[in-house]
Image (cartoon, rainbow, N blue to C red; front, side, top):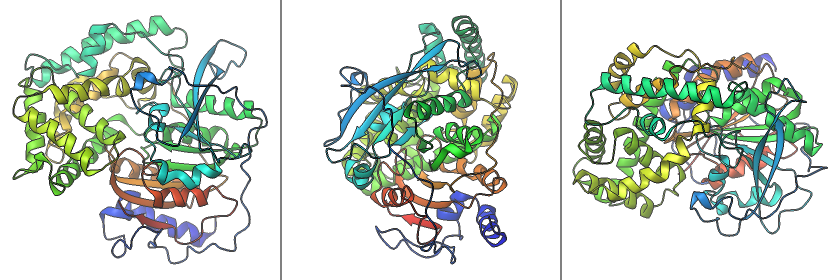
Length: 520
């Protein structure tokens, strides 16, 4: 990396990636429309650059077959025109013991009828936010059509999640208390902390007994080893990874362990890497607050029922009422899970916003059936046993239980809708051991492409800012694209972002500017 390029990226990092593109004066001028647009970097033209390392089709592919009933539990239709095939492969439970016990990793491949058989695949990992296989079912095929014509998308579920070998190690009671963050009977915050801690400690004991001696082999580093196992089975020199949300931690762990095998890296709506848990939760609380306020405003703009005099206040009322125990069958955690999951997987259309708005207005009037149904649909996608084990494996700098009320109080000024639940979430891993943090990448074979969602309803946009120091230290000079739609993943919804990604996966560096914006 030349000194001038390093200076340019350091300047961008000083603003923070999210702020650079959307939130501050680092951006330049109005949104020019649906095409890929210019950003701040006047020296970004790279048209004469040499070819990039090749991504190639698998020499030995997996034994794909019909998905049958494997995806039926999601109760979601296959996007029109998309062809899905399912497979799995075995991977060592302990990456350091390749000849030891194995775990089954589930895979779903998405193609179009005209996707060539000899096309290089793009590996999708969502980490533990949502199963990769479920996100695949929410693709906007029109947005990603040109990319899919050239690259099958192969969704790899993180071990213990989705179609990978499931984990079942909690009691029904523990699962319920943890999913509700200790809510019940109008409990005050301190009482919720104690109820959550009791359930978390019991769950930790049971999961340790169930999974021993491999209870710490469900972290991002082990998930990255599964991707390397897939690359090895494919007999290809390198792979391209499309990571979404916390899948960025899996992708960055892979980049650290296998830098020469990572041919392309798309960090879509990424989170921080090895960030202390209180810092990560604070950023998530503020980011989610902003995303929920954006949803309320857009819901009002399209004429949904939530649009009364103050749609944000109406949403706040529902969350607060649920937190007090005033909405039968709903806690504040369940309301937020229902809303954010619906936004994450929805298409962002006026009809979808209106439907969610109607459910919230009904709940505000005491009629909770529609919102409870959304919460019931969300729970297995957001807090399965495997997701809990993975998150507790990855947690860094876990705070003490006695600090959770003060953290909630500190964050409430900037994040009144989300501060309490995000602070309580930190108590879900009380009593759990944590795996050793993965190394950070020191270099990239090809500079990453970062897609930043201003209104990320799962992690919030602020989480991406903590990646700047890591990328600077690794000498990266990434391209970044901002988008202000609503949903988990920029590329699955935005044809503009998918166009950039399609070019990025080609054999030459991206042309045009380093910093760009796409319309919602």
